[in-house]
Length: 499
Ligand code: TNX
Image (tube, rainbow, N blue to C red; front, top):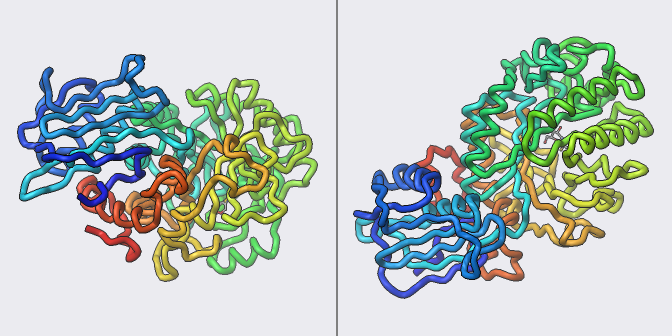
């Protein structure tokens, strides 16, 4: 039997002797949420809708604590025999992931849908397996975000980082600062329509994410990437810093340079800053991060901190320290892009998100943080063009990129000075300067997210024979029909042998 098409590859998979499990006539017993998810996936892939039955031949359950049950969070065991299938999750997330694996295993044999006889014991390598969506450069509504959550969760990703604010727009309603969405949410890159999430919208996103075992990590980017704040609260915004780069960018795009108090629809970075040291700015930060913490059930708030080229170094250190303090006082853990890990003194407990290259520059300070999330831009950035002629995406991170590049990097040892235990996990960001529709999202995210998801979930290559590019590309190719059935408009990369 060929290697089953499971991505990310499980911690342990044994193919068994014997006949496969036939889907025709199968019935499902056990956990209602998992059964609903299994039916959604099976119906989409096969058109068959297995009935529920108390004595079902497919048994889905969450383990009671016991010596024979899987223990690690998010883990599951899955057994397919000729007459029965059982999936036992250590917790609800583990059961959900076992169901995703089952859907990937479905295949046709002699005209009938079957599950191959296998035994899987699976658990994640890293606790944090993330994907990021930039809803500031272009806005995506609640439905689009929910679909994105479904897609990420199907690859066992468990964090969605929402980049909620940038120079081009503010996308979350805050009761403490109503002017932000009243005045700074209407536009997007290229003059496209903006938009924002009401608090009810945000609650719907959070609820849907929770049902998919995904934690939302909201980002309010400060002190740079804040031009939009000046549309609402001009007294706390510094004047735009018009470097040659910002001017060149405006010229290339046939767009205007940023002007204080007017919407910015270009894609230059690094020109905006809050006014640091002003009591009104401090009050703004306390309101914004305090309310964000109250709205957000997950443990993390992301404060941005990237490309603050318009902020003086001492001011930068001061505003990072102040904001980490506000986040900690609200009972949350602060994440920042890795530039923030350079400040003296380093705020305790800061998680750094590394976005340099796979081969880091010797001067990177990301390793100073107490833990890191790895998003090497030349490998894990989903917004890099897959080839130079591709209509979507950017090129700056050593583009054009490839699926193989997204797959062939190893978190351990990537940053000198970071111990394996200090790696919280990995994240694949999608910046949306060029991304305008859900189909655009799919085209850049698939198949490359599958590569990063496998790095985050599966055992290291040294510990698993299936962790090779050749195995991965064959397995991803086998997922094409499932993705199509689920409506995922993936890019049919020539690197992958699609089935
Ligand atoms: C850099 S990476 C940015 C974003 C851009 C992105 C485009 C990082 C932390 N900041 O502001 O959208 O490049 O790829």
